[in-house]
Length: 130
Length: 152
Image 1 (cartoon, each protein chain N blue to C red):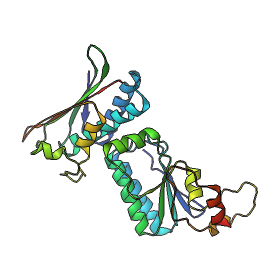
Image 2 (image 1 turned 30 degrees about the horizontal axis):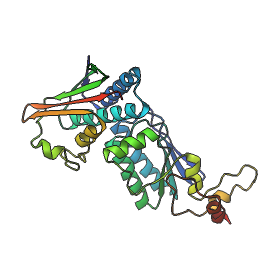
Image 3 (image 1 turned 60 degrees about the vertical axis):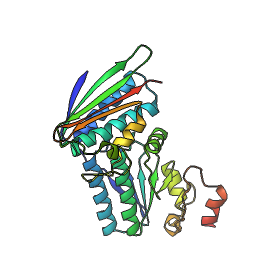
Image 4 (image 1 turned 90 degrees about the vertical axis):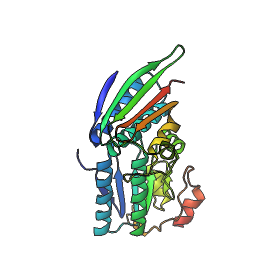
């Protein structure tokens, strides 16, 4: 388990590189590596732009039959007022096109989001090795 | 990090993205391309993304907007060399480079624009006289007959 801060655009590059490196270590396919890095890029951008910065926890995930990668994004930003709406394509605040959350969900296997107004947002994604 | 070079080859503008793109670099590149086009018109701009191992929604949007802006300045844009994993991921996310011409390699992109590589013919003006072709095949190589007809 490692924790990486997300405070600027270079940090976004750093976290997606870390995710890709862990995916390489676990011998994910090239397409899955790209899916993971892209989902991480989207969520890290959300953490920075909408959450005002935060952190990503990255870890190896495993259950009895498989292993994978889990990334958890945490910010203490304003929170998301309407998660269902934010999960729909095209929803946008803060000058983005709102592809981030639905895109990251499509690219990963497990997706969880919790958000509390004025407290922050936590998004957890897991990609299992096929 | 050094700026991504914006190169002029003949009357073609060529940008080859070799580094990891962050949002700031992407926007700065867009501005530099448009400034360059403003100083010196180019009928076509090729953006080589073969080294990019990721196109997220932000980078995708910058590429799309850059192509739209260049088109308003009368410049045709071809995005070349997208890696298969990037194409798969973008499509799964629901992203598309809407209405942008693409080619699988730089050479095919240039050829599809109506330019020709000549190894033996010493006519250096041939490329300058070549007309722009209006349509770039996205996945398949243009048929030899098409290429012939553009220069016949």
